[in-house]
Length: 151
Image (cartoon, rainbow, N blue to C red; front, top):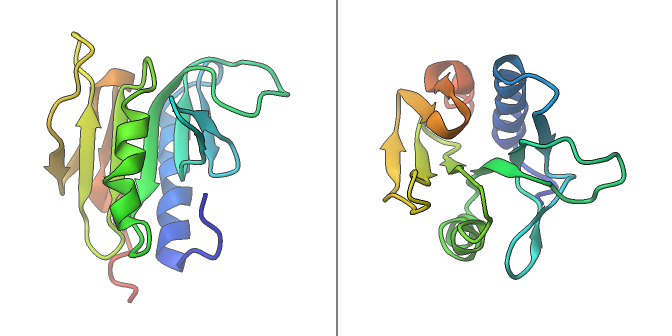
């Protein structure tokens, strides 16, 4: 969980939630921010944005069926997002996608789990974020509009 984030970080997280909310129906999908946790094999993490595919109940402190986890890259979190978090998130049964968004340029790294339950090599995207596991495609120009020009 990040506190004291940059404006670009906050804008990207808010826009991702808005875009996902337009694309995925509630119920069953719940879209959350860093206030809500996800249990990995070794810890509880608080991703910047997450899609849970099951409703659970109002007292849950972590996702029931996490399908998508998005982290927004910050200089201080880069080694963690590409290292321990990546490995921990891969241990989550049923997780379909892990996405890392850059802040300073239109760029997304996408790890996806295939039908054989294996993780593919990451794809570097700069046009469309294709999330087949949840049947969503996100135009990165829309997501990043006005963000990368703010320095």
